[in-house]
Image (tube, rainbow, N blue to C red; front, side, top):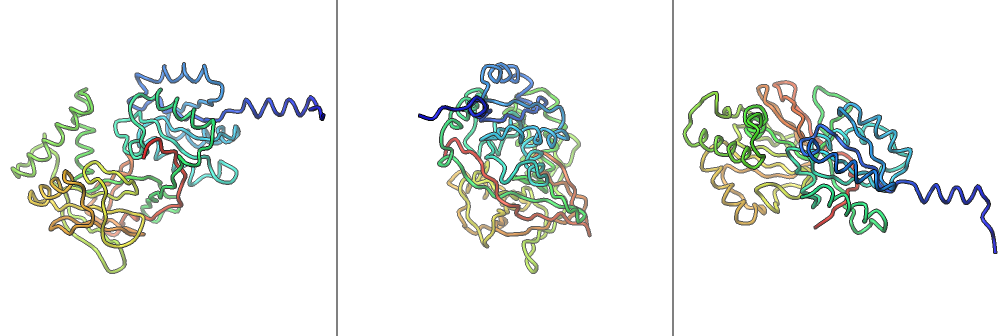
Length: 338
């Protein structure tokens, strides 16, 4: 019977004790302010978790370099959509991992957590982390899903910003209104979002312009090909690769491509039509006046210094300097629920 040499036995012990899960935390994310101490305690009791905290998103590249050294089976991002976007950008533009990066999981800890929700992760972060650690003990195959990503470039930049959900036109202005005027009131997220929705609907229906209301959407030109474009003022403009959206459920549209575009013209009738469609099971390819839905490989957005927000980061679409969106190479994610 062969006997392991001391060096071989030490290597076996090293491999057995190697962290299966790398957890990247942003302490500044809203949920982490109150819950990070519990996560730290949990990680201290579980040596199979390599926990790395960053104070600023600029440190995520260095964090990934350190994480790559432990060769984890899964990379868990503990933060909101902005933290996830910064990590995906660093993974895409850097060369931190040998070969393919590990599958990515997300624990929702921010103001907006659309990416985590799309992956079936919600509720208590410790419960989610426990479930992910459990999955990492076995075969991850049936829990993995390849997701397309959005590569945003402005001013011809070579290194894109990577994300999964872009809001533009009136939606971007509304998100900034909520961030700058409602969140500082210190109200719960659900209340803040409800007040913002009421303010948007009031401005749209009344036509009143006031500093305490969201601004009117500016003109935009959105192109989904060399010959096709739509121009107008849009209450909502979304480009995403996520399968689940706040209002639409499953959607289907014209064209073929990984980037899903939804644009709702800034008219009460169009918004009402979209709300009814969302509550009755999604658009599902139905053509409706004032509502545009397409799927494309490339989208450009050009406007009069109009805001667009990609997973929490704000950019501006200008005349003669459009924002370009393309699909980036897919990345493997861990999904907890279908």
